[in-house]
Image (cartoon, rainbow, N blue to C red; front, side, top):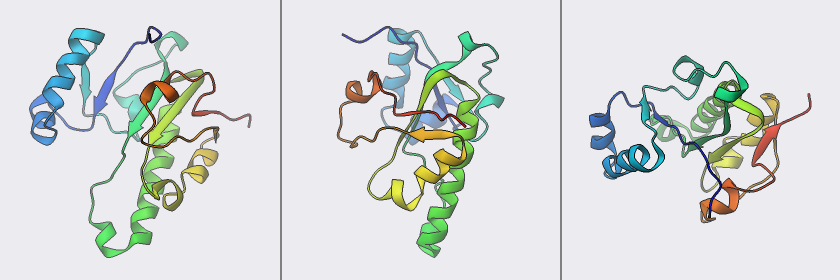
Length: 161
C-alpha cells in the first residue's frame, strides 16, 4: 500500500542499551527497523549537526524526508521562564533546519512533530523561513502518518530565495 521507501533512524543517545533504558519500546522498534526495513539506528546524532554523522555528498545519498519527532532540549528552562524555554527551542529548530537541509534532496521535505502551542511559542515559521524553507502544510498530531508522509505536496520545501 505504501511506496518503496528507505528508512534511516538516528538518536542523540550514544548506544542501543541507553536507548532501551530511555524508551520502553526501543528494542522492538530497532528490531523492526533492522528486520523489515534493513536499516539500523545511528547513535550519537546531534540534530543540529546531522552532517557530522550522516554523510550525504551526492544527491543519491541524500534523503527525501528528514523528520524530527518531538524535539526537546530536556532542560529546566521551562521552570525558570517559559519565554526562555521557547527561545532555546527556537534556536534548536533553527539549527536543525540548516543541518537537515545539508542531507535533503532537491525537492525534499523536512517534517517536525510538535504538539500543543509549541509551533507558535517556538516560532517554527520564523525558524523555517530564516533557514530558506517554506511551510506549506500543517497536520494535527492525530493525523495518520500515511496522510502526510506520502502526500504529493510536501510538509516543508525549499523556498526560492
